[in-house]
Length: 160
Image 1 (cartoon, helix red, strand yellow):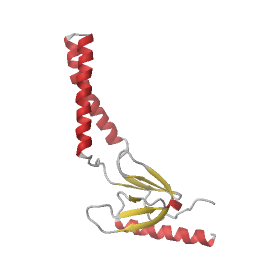
Image 2: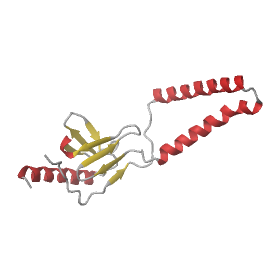
Image 3: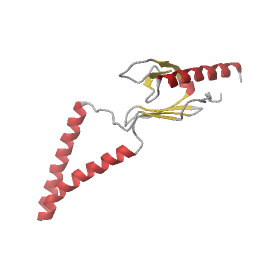
Image 4: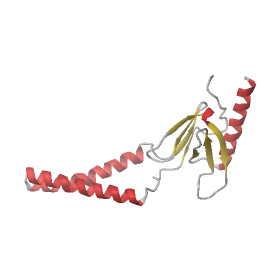
């Protein structure tokens, strides 16, 4: 059976939520800060204990912030921010920095649109029971996507 192809005329290929990074849970932030402190202390003990020179005493204090700064720039510019990307055969969703979904249109049961202010205006319901947000898509485009998916399913059922 060939994959379901959706005509995406009138829709953009990619919808970005912007460059903002989603807020991390407070426990995770505390765990990451604690792990960073432990790493800095362990690194300082090893460097100062083995080499013992004054220049190397400052090395952990310099390298750790530089590493964190470089990592922040990399994550900010890597295109890993939340977005929705549409292709005729697949839906690509990235809701968080660490999650990515590539779904064939046949796995999408329903596309729902709502006019909520705090949440994404669209959501997809999948065959496995999950619900995923359509990040960055305006409500009007969510409605167009739902209509395009319905037309594609009707055409596939008719054998066209």
